[in-house]
Length: 239
Image 1 (tube, rainbow, N blue to C red):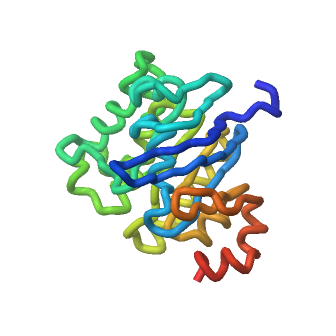
Image 2 (cartoon, rainbow, N blue to C red):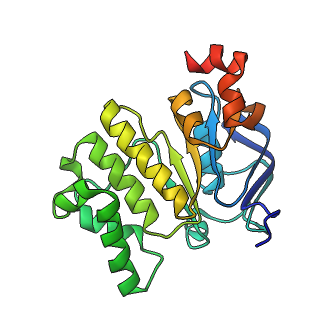
């Protein structure tokens, strides 16, 4: 892949929910190895953007290109083997399955048993709490542990692009720091991350670039450091 070729490019993306236009002519680009964050108020279209990229919602107009190929009409189960993993808002772990079973199910598109076993151990290194609870039912984990499991499960597909939706939602500050420490570690391994996060300041502090969404449209984009210093962004989103 040439350095100038984006990992993901979205052009003119529009999505409707019933009669409501959730996204309108949205453009964004993600280069390999970047951490990109989407910030905006509740209902701005951030989660919908992730769901459109992972092909969980129907696109009304526009195009989604991933490593040069058009995936706009692909189904959700078809994009996971291509290297896109989605850790959704609300964690959604399989509560009646063990931690270990959740991780195994995260690798459902793979058949390399030795590689899967190695990656499970890697996730236990990434998240030592999960190692301690490997045989525990996921539904009995704390909220922070469930979030760690949701991310670890997404990583089991060996994604090139990880979509993270609200990883800090409802978590104690110490757990949030731990989660974002993992995000920083992941970027050093070459995983590209598109992050939706309620804590806009924290997201921008860990991102390379950011996009500001308002009512389904991108109103501002730029390096994260500049968005942190932007007076409009500070007043609207940074408190």
